[in-house]
Image 1 (cartoon, rainbow, N blue to C red):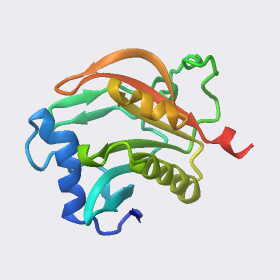
Image 2 (cartoon, rainbow, N blue to C red):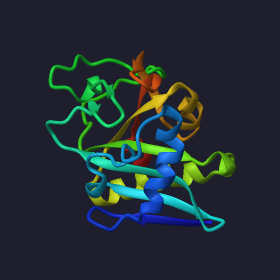
Image 3 (tube, helix red, strand yellow):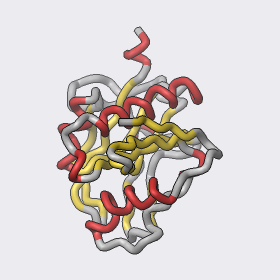
Image 4 (cartoon, helix red, strand yellow):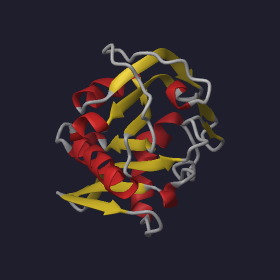
Length: 190
């Protein structure tokens, strides 16, 4: 098993995108090419190579001060809502664990494109990818928090890796039900 990290501006091999497509886009009937996401070349991209195959992928990108994490994915014909706590008109609230969200939330990252080939699931590869995205985001951008939109089936994975749901369930068109999740990296440093 080999963990590979590519930083913003570094070349990403087509095999990385092929794995992302097989895991996240082909099952939805999305066209080839939809696995290429905005900000891929500005992101920290991480993958696991196992048995000469890229078997787990993920990435994190910095959310600019005016970005709230909402995503319109034209290629996959879907849309994800904003992360309320990153919106300018946010009313403080708590996550599912009763922890207040805010106010020191930025710099913030968004995790996208996480997945593992079915043949390599249960081996801890996705946790390695996610952990590397978190660690390198803290080093490169001094990220204080992380944000993601999780398919309901992935929530136990993210919860096991220290992420917490907040807000109501919502449907992402052409993908299915999701919940928003966050992780406070500040508490990890204390």
